[in-house]
Amino acid sequence: MKLKKEFLYRTIKEAKDGELEELRRKALNSLWRQNYHIQPPYGLLNDPNGFCQLVDGSWKLFYQWFPYGPVHGMKHWYEVGSDDLVHWKNRGPALIPDSPYDDYGCYSGSGFIAEGEYRVFYTGNHRDEHWNRKSVQIIAREKNGVLKKELPAIADVPEESTEDFRDPFVWKEGRGYKAVIGARLRGDKGAVFFYESENGLQWQEKNCFTLGKEFGYMWECPNIAEIDGKIILIFCPQGLEDLRYENIYPAVYLIGTKEEFDKETAALLDYGFDYYAPQIAKDSKGKYILIAWMGLPEIEYPSDKDEWAHCMTVPRELSLKEGRLYQKPVEDLKLLRKNPQLYKTDKDIEIELSEEKAYEFIIRTSGDFECSLFYNTEKKKGFLIEYHEKKKLLRIDRSGLENTFGEKYGSTREINLEDSSLLRIFTDKSSIEIFTEEGTVLSSRVFPIPLEKDCCFKGEGEIEIYSLEKIEGIQ
Image (cartoon, rainbow, N blue to C red):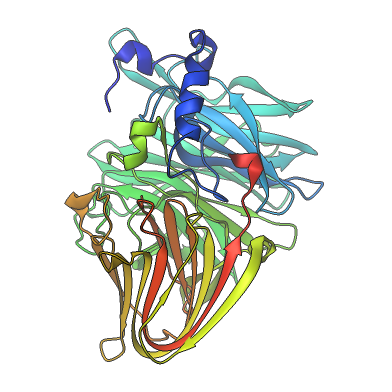
C-alpha cells in the first residue's frame, strides 16, 4: 500500500473528521484481529519501545505506531500497560512528533528509572528542505502520567557515523547509566556506539564496536544484557548476505565481555518467518524479559487491506545455557488457560477446534511426527510442523495455507533440534509461536480463512490443548 507524502507525514492531531473512526471500524471487522497479542487499534505497529518494569511492579510498554494505515509513515509512540506481562491494556498515543527535533518521527528508544521517575531515551527524526535527515537523541520524563520532552541529550552524530544513528537502549550500571546506540558508519559498516551518564540526562561517548562490512551496513535496535557474567549484545543487522539468515532482516545476538564481542557466537534470536526489533527489560528479580515485533519491514501482509498491520510476540524470559540464549514463555501466560483437553495417540488424529484459534498446545513426542495447525479438514492442509529424528531436524512450512505472503523469502524454515520431546506452541487468530525444549523459538504470522482452524497429528505422542482467554484491553 502506498500513500502520498502529505498523508504519510501527518500527526494524529491532523486527522480529518471521522477519519480515525473509519480506520478503527475497518480494523475491528478484520478476520485476523488477535485475541491476546498486543496489536494496534488501527494503522501500523512496529518496534517495541520504552519497555520497563516500574517501581510499583507494573509494566510499561510503547510501540512505534503510524495511525493512518498499514504503512511506515510518521512514527508516534503508542502506550500499553500491564500488571503481569499478560493482561495488557491500551493507553493511547504517548509521544507525538510535534517538536522541531522529531517533526518527522519519534523513532525507537528505551525506558528506564532514574531518581525515582520513569524516563525514555529515543531518536528524534528531522528532515530539512532538501529531505536530508538529522538524527538526535532525546530524553522525555514522565510527569503525572505524561511524557515531557527535554532538549536533545545527544544533538550530533559521532564523527564516524552517518545520520543513520538511532534506537538508544539504556541500562543502569553502578551509580550511573550506560547506553548503546545503533549506527551506519561512513563506508557502510554497521556498528554500535556506547555512551555513559552520571544522571541519565547528559551523555558522553565512550567507544564504538563494529564487525565490518561483512556483518551488514546498519545495526538497528541494540540491547545489552548481562547474564551469568556474560554480556549479550542483541541487534538487528541490515545488509547481511549470509544465507543462514533467510528473513529480509534478522535479529541476532553476540556474546562477549563489556564492549567487545565474538562474532563466532553470532546466532539468531528467532527462527520463524516474522520477527524483528526485540527489546528487553529487567524485572525486579533480575530476570530479563524480551518482547519483539512479530513482523518485518518491506513485506505486505494480508491484514493491510483492513487498515492495520502487525503485533507483538508473547513476552519471553531469557537465560543462558551452554553458551546460547534460552527462551521460554513468561510464567503468567498460564493465567490465560481454560478448557483443557488431552489426547494420547499412536496413529493419525484430527482434532476439531474453535474458529477463535487462540490456543496453547503442549506436544510430547518420541520419534518422527507431523503436526498441522490451522488445518483445513477438506483440503487436508495447514501450517505444517514436522520432525525428522534421524536428521535431528525440525521444519515448518506455511505454504499449505490459503493466504500466502512474503514468498520471496521462502515458505519453509528449518532448525537443528536434538531434543524434540516437548514443544509449547501458542496460536492466535493470525500468529503461531513455537518454543522448543532447547530454548529456541520460531515466530510466524499466518492469516487463515475460517476453515483453517483444526489440528492434525501424525505420530506417537501426547497433545495437551488449552483455549486461551481473550484480552479485551488490547482489542
